[in-house]
Image 1 (cartoon, rainbow, N blue to C red):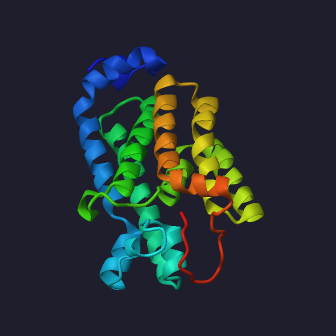
Image 2: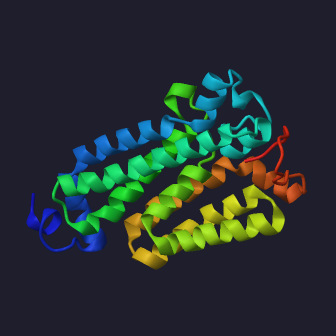
Length: 235
């Protein structure tokens, strides 16, 4: 491998990516597969199906996500769901960073590796092969990934999410803000075309998974967050 990509000067944004991808395609495929498998460990499905013996996907919105789990079951097991969905994102991103160091690649490759692993972790969460490709909408895992990417991106994404949820109690509205603002924050921080493309793809996935919520928001029928167990349609 040439020093400009692996050990020497930082790659020059898009100009160096074809060479980089040509050299590191196998590690990137392996990283994608690992991150996807990490994402497949869906906390809501695992806890509801194997601990509570009552699949969360048969309740409420049918979504295998944190909000639907909380509205359906409530209780301290919600914390287990949170921990599972957070840890899988942490493992996927840390693996990406470790892989960059293991390959002795330049540190400037780390953001690309993080975005790449984050994308496939979300794909695993949304479309888990071990659960018939019926997963969640990616907000908790996605939010964790954002926190591990850059604090400035996290400030925009999480800040808007929390403000909107606190003001409206619509988790889906905050989620849509988080998804829509992510590519803009990515461009503001990195000014990198490939990272922007990955950010747009991640954003599009989350918004697409929230399409039914968006329709209900426009109709004024979307359920609001409450702090007690109830079977309602949600995120």
